[in-house]
Each structure stands twice: as structure tokens, then as C-alpha cells.
Image (cartoon, rainbow, N blue to C red; front, side, top):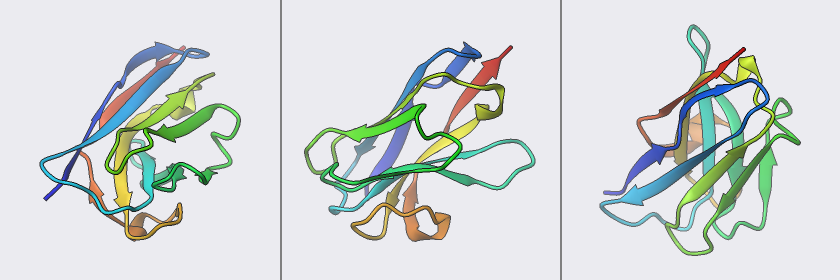
Length: 125
């Protein structure tokens, strides 16, 4: 069974950048969409971005459009990346990578079956 492992989180000043990575280990993923979600303390997990397995179609939450970019290596089960620029205090959260149940990028948490353990992103003033 495939496991997802996130990396790249850390502490960054507002206006700075971070790049998150998500790799599958211990198995292979079907050719499904991949997504990034985040959860801040006391809040529900929310959609950030998603991408088809080919990388040809992407979807972003309004709050990150123009600042974040999702991408993936063009191979089955290749790493998925989230480039985060112009970070804001409100971007502070645990960021999770997830494998979807279907081909198309989807913003619904319930449409993702496999989840990583998460990586902490903290934006400081």
C-alpha cells in the first residue's frame, strides 16, 4: 500500500517562499489526481490546490491563486510539489498531500483516499 510523505515545511517570514514536496513510497498510486490541503489550529482542513496525474489540469483555492503553484513530475507516482510564494501569516498551517479517487482535480476532502502525515508551515511577521 502506497504511503505519502511530505517534506519542505518550516518557518519563513511573511513575503517569503517555501517549496513542499510529496513522494509516494512502498507502492504505486493509480493514475489519480493529487491534492494539497491545509489545516490551521481550530479550523477544518481546507483545499489548497490539486492537479491531474498528467499535470495537464490544475485547480486552486481562491486564497492562494497567483501565489501558489502545484506541479508534478510527469511519471506515474512521481513527486508532487507545491511552490508557495508571497506567503502570508494566514498561510500558517499543517499542509497535507493527498491522492484522489479520480482523474480530475477536486476540492473536496472526502474525495481523497490516501493522506500523508503533514508538514508544518509557519509564517512569521
